[in-house]
Length: 240
Image (tube, rainbow, N blue to C red):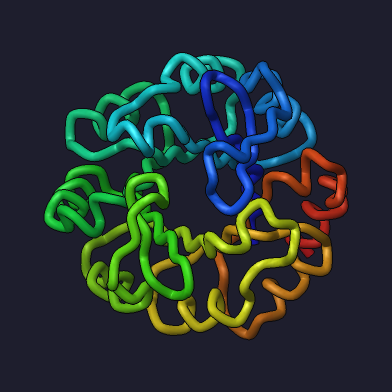
């Protein structure tokens, strides 16, 4: 399993939200590029970036911060938030992102996801953000009646590189991930799955690793900033 440290960008700062609420943002670093470099120096092999403002605006907002991160680091990075057309996808990949994450458009324009995955093999992931098992879009502000597993299965043959499953109720709450739902989704599809939301201890990572389902990785944010998870220990655990 790969540990993906999360760098959530809001107004140019590195923040963490509580259950996806923009008004409940805690700033952890006003220099996202320095934070990204610190994660790289600690041994992280990937970075998980989210343009929070972009998720609401429907277009990139924190582009300058992402550009700075890409300049300062050499490990692959994936980015989600406000990426909703082919031109934006191509622009980000041209700048050096390894992978773009499409969330809202997976619901609103699934054909675009398929086109992107075909045009940029291995470069497109789908963000599955769910509250009580139902997908939420547009920065988690709009809820749908679409069951997360049903949406994931729609893209089994699309050639997407990964699914990133976030249980919104667990995100930033430091109460542990929804291991059962994550494992169930991983078993229901063949696409590599990355767990997100609530990973707050080494035990959480052990639980995901030993869930009985194959997981590609896990994303953690607040716990790394707060020190609840020792980064070196976490990396060693997931590599063992």
